[in-house]
Image (cartoon, rainbow, N blue to C red; front, side, top):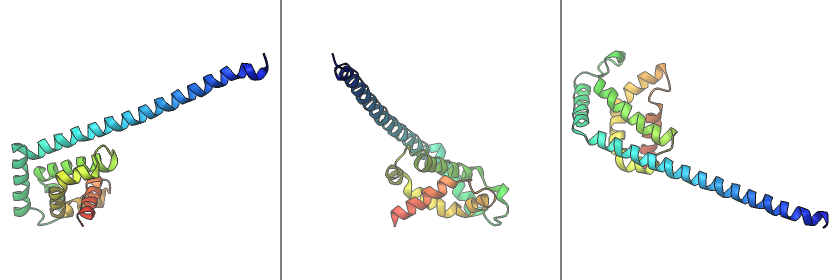
Length: 155
């Protein structure tokens, strides 16, 4: 048998192994995308459930009342930001993280479900966020990016 004849089975084996590796890598890639999308949808449903819960509705009403009555008369008094307001900001920061940083939730899905309240609260709480960001630019960074994306999408 010639040298070319003995290399043919080796070549066929190598090509088959390469093909199997490419198929396996593709399967892993698409499964990862599917799992990420599923996690995003689950997280979005949790956020919707939280947002619509009676407890969080009461928190939002409390935040609105406190903002109208007491804050920010003096923006330098950042230590008096009510917890109800911080709860709202933290929820939108989490939503921003899921959309902007982890990319587990598509912008369109977040926009459909949260654009109106996220933008409305952004306009109300923006001075608070800016005071926080003057000390640390990463505070509510994802909410800032998300609000700007929502505003651009609305425009």
